[in-house]
Amino acid sequence: MVSQRLKLFIPLIVFVVLAVLFWRGLSLDPNAMPSALIDKPVPAFSLPMLENTDRMVDQDIFKGKVSLLNVWATWCPTCYAEHGFLVTLAEQGVPIYGVNYKDDVPAAQKWLKELHNPYVLSVVDADGRLGVNLGVFGAPETYVIDKEGVIRYKHIGVVDEKVWTQTLQPLMAKLQ
Image (cartoon, rainbow, N blue to C red; front, side, top):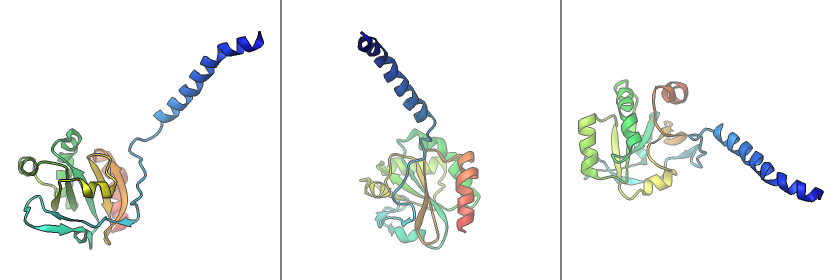
């Protein structure tokens, strides 16, 4: 008789446990995804430049200056949302390199021509191999690269004024 009454509370106990787990999940930052590449060099690559697909560049482009590496694509609505702010950063002298991720080259070239190009240069990652090596979950993602070409931070999602002033700018200043 007592065990039958206890069975009545099992759904309530399960509900309470699930509610606690759900509440805990809501407090987590979805952009705080760990990256195995933090404090490691940018993965080796040799890819064509978007602006001149006959010219190949490699990971050595990051040596000598603290910079941002931004993974973007024309099919990405969130990339469109952050693009204007990246243009503003570039106008302020922030060096930003782009990885045009699994995109149509003519569409990407047209995008930069019409919306302004914030990138020192952008590489074409047509098959997504560099993206896989970087651990890209989806565009946009932005990395802070130090003067030796080492990844120091990874941000998933839009780079906006808040992300820039609270996270990326202080880190870049520290790395200078």
